[in-house]
Image 1 (cartoon, rainbow, N blue to C red):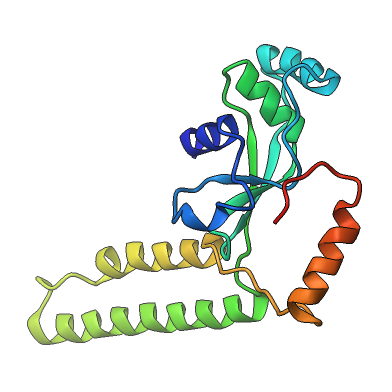
Image 2: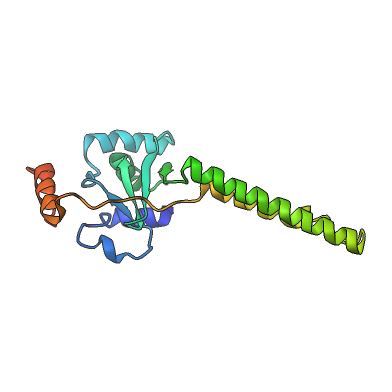
Length: 183
């Protein structure tokens, strides 16, 4: 991920006009313009980057954009890039809801128990040359449980009440006085 982060930030991140054409390249979308390397905060962070004490950049994976958003750490990322060091990253993404997780764990346990029972029947029928099934079912069960706890889930989104017109009103209000590119 560092390589994509480096390329995206070095090239100014994703712009509002081209965020949708990157198609899985794992670029990074800053939520505000990236600071220059000469700004005071960036200079202070550059010293920390050289010393290896730079706090992490907080990234949030947004499936609908197919990229990471920089939630916090724009200046820290600019400092790391200026010093050519890999920044520490804290990556946040959506996981399963607790009730979905519990239901899927129950399904995984049932599947594991079924597989062990199937091997036990085969073993009873064909003798001790048939394995007990733990070596086959166990690693798969562990993988399923790990994936249930860590796998990324799509982010949720709902249409904005008021549609496109409300979106434009909101963006004008929020960006009033800002020198941002027009969308």
